[in-house]
Length: 218
Image 1: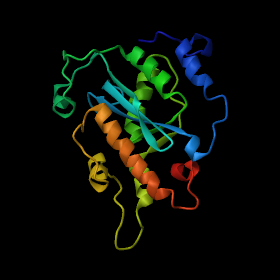
Image 2: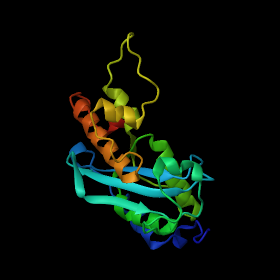
Image 3: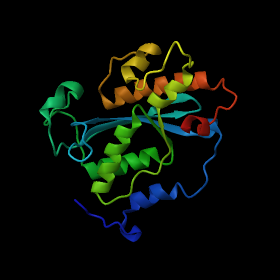
Image 4: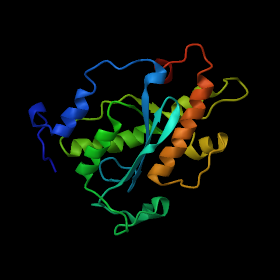
């Protein structure tokens, strides 16, 4: 559904507004940064064949979750996969108000701005969002991205006796940090669990003398 050609002058205003936020140099001070912790629920795991069903996100400012600034939207289901309903519980003709994919992307860009994006196994969520943007003739997201699955490993003491696993699930992090899982597998619920885990990880890593955004990205 290529409504917009890829030449810059044909990009919609909402994209130009989003892109303009990155023209100014961001503060590198950790406490000045705004983080958007997000999760997507999808019809499956294929970037090309599957679609986003919902996007949930919370903002973190000054190391606290801004509960009045949550993002929680549901998308019209142009594709339906009954195999994944048991995970996310989103039915094709459910009671929730749903919006088109392009409107969801517009709202998400307005919400995220130039914040640092945080997600658990972020490659998947970013892949789904970027594929959706490209599907509408838009460029990919420009935000810095942190993965809680990756930065959690920085908290682990490396030794010959205990080898870190290559992959930690969100459930494992919730268990490790004693975070309630009652809204697990809703986009907003998973975003909130990820946000709490992120703050717990940061509180541990801040004790290191070389702590910075650059350290988290390494």
